[in-house]
Amino acid sequence: MAEIVIVENEDAAGAIVADAIVTLIRSKPDVVLGLATGSTPLASYRALARRIADDEIDVRGVRGFALDEYVGLPAGHPESYRAVITREVVEPLGLTPELVRVPNGDPASIEHAGGDYEAAITAAGGVDLQILGIGRTGHIGFNEPGSSLASLTRVKTLTEPTRLDNARFFDSPADVPMHCITQGIGTILRARHLVLLAFGAAKAHAVAAAVEGAVSASQPGSAIQLHPHTTVIVDEAAASELTNLDYYRHAWANKPAWQGI
Ligand code: F6R
Image (cartoon, rainbow, N blue to C red):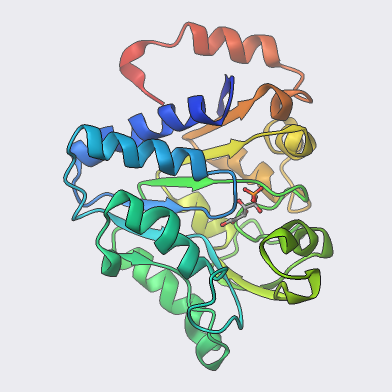
């Protein structure tokens, strides 16, 4: 089962994530990171940027693959995930821009964009550590309920709740694209370590379903139960619908320090 870590806030989660990634970079300077967008990982990216600067870590070889992208936004749109990854990850961390890929949401080449992305991940040797958020609908990446647990990178139609949740980044809900291209659940499960982050009461149901519910395509987050190395880092509010909380706290408090996450 996944390891569940309950933290006080997003900054505390960020410190844990930054530590795990810095350890990885030290042992593998061309590590491959799987990058989520959205609000959830931002504190972790900030913590990582600080660690990289403070400890003077050489990140020029670090590679990255974003989870997803909207289909059909004009190139350079500030809310395209290409722009978000550049702004929130590549620039603050000082990564080499050419080494960080985002799925191509250009409608002109969308038919083979999924296959191209899969090939690029495979050619890079796979993702070492995948950062995940989770949507209210239970999605990971943009794999909405009903997505095959074996799915690979492909175009999906966003649900209305997800479009409404993401409307905060656009002028109006109607401006949120209807389609996205996302790593599949099967793609995500190939990463060597999954780190799923969730904060706030709005995520409590999705977290409980992912961690303790039945494994089901109806709850895409539950696919983490199929992975041998998953860490779920949540605050108290996001953890509030978990039933086995006492054990998670006990296991974390007694975890051997050498293990890391
Ligand atoms: C983002 C992604 C999504 C988000 C999820 C949560 O690349 O794949 O699964 O992680 O929608 O979004 P936030 O973090 O904005 O609540």
